Length: 166
Image (cartoon, rainbow, N blue to C red; front, top):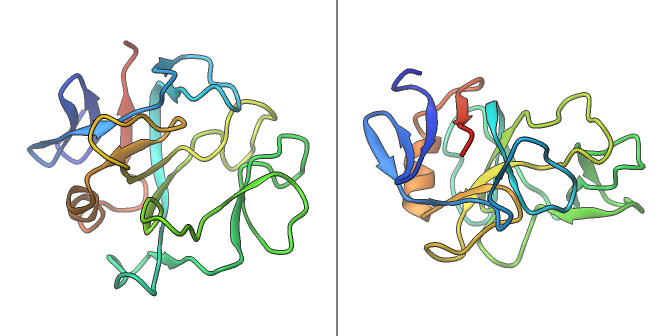
């Protein structure tokens, strides 16, 4: 592990010499992630993308991609685009990336079950803004808004997210 890694600890995520409080999945940590289990998968994951709401904030980095009104994330394990960003119209089960709340104003995408998704092994392990301190996610890792923005400005594609076994 290096200071450039995001490392989940009992106190939060350690990165660049700081520790940031965070929330994880309501199902806790798991070594065997399944779609809909609400758990955060253990292991070494990599940041492979960054999305942001251009109507709410400026691009935090040059490699961030704006989220449009028709941008979704497929969570339909029976579809060939499972665990991929998709666009409207999209008839299969999906999650809207452009939400009315601020949770996905800035999203760091990990390579969990990506790019060659195994059906049913879980989709969309993001780093995003939390609802409130301690409020669990559906499996993602969530941070206070200012902390997420601080992290986003300092990471690069390929930055490792290390989630040790409990």
